[in-house]
Image (cartoon, rainbow, N blue to C red; front, side):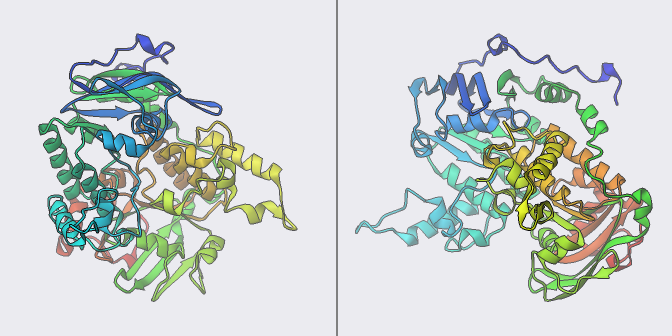
Length: 546
């Protein structure tokens, strides 16, 4: 841990938020005054004031559960405040539903794409404001033409008639962005907009933000990526535990000070301490790294995967790198039996799986944390307890009767150890913040005591504190002997977290990095060109543990 003098001390918890620096009202377009919002057993916002100026990009930061999402939902009419008031361009407003906020000029891009999957790209962009012809019918030709022109400005080439659900998550996010900026808005709220984007798309987004600022449009920007915040944001507001902690210029604020305000504790302490002792697996410890736990040979699926071969060893974190569309998620799903294959073999602990299926993979000890926790992970209408024990129900039952005592014991262990913030285990998981939902999913699979844990973007969309905790947890699990496959779009996270990296491109293995080859420059070289891979690499099928 850094010496005490090198790390600014976290501020004391704020008992009286009104004493904190008050947001300025100069040039204010959107303002929240002493807003409060409560849910059963939880105070989500406590006397929070916030202001957004025309033509600025304002960062909103805080840990998961700090109140960011609740504040956004109050500003956009999803929730109505229990106390305080909202003002838009100086006029007091109250939105009964999101459509009213949109009509008033507040447009929102959510982290998890909130469009209609079965509708076409064009219908999604113009939903609720479709172009009409002289007969009053929808003018599809005009909508398709304008959609193509709009998406061209975002570098997206896609048939406007194509159903949204057939596109990748990154492209869907760009469609959501195009819809948001195509509305005549005074305010654009962006909640983790780059979480699913390629670097090229991120640059396009930043260019769009600069254009919005030039037009005097206010941008509220929520992200856990510090580099992004310091690059494009003018001011920052920090929330913690539902309180307003700080508002001020971002340029004059040291990064560690900002993190300390968010966490109320030392970030390096979180990562150093980790979350040890979560499960009882990994009795072989580091010695397990000498034996392959999982071996995949020539996994193939038409148009998606071609001869994917890799081995994963106990006690290691194997990175799976590649750009969006390279086959990373498809490979993870294939290993977990969630994606049917045309050919290939999979062995766990030296035993070949006769039939690769989800049930067979789980029985063999393979667990997958999916990329899209909303669509493929959590069951929002069920409680935290029910979500955690969902996969373990067969183990917790006897003669068809599920033991509630065993459920409660497991849930209590993981809620405490993963620091899941919930009013109670009976709170609906859909009411939790994104980071806490991710922790619930991790708890679900860890309570099965797996041999192999496949993590697809495990830190996407969670705050720096929760991210450090998850990264520390991954390190601890590997030290205990678990075999971990880590997929991440964050190159720095992949380099720091993985001992080896298998790089995919176009659904094939482009190369492997290990030892001293695990650097950003080498990874970028392999991503860019087959021939640029380090000379020392070996084919994935011949991997040797280092």
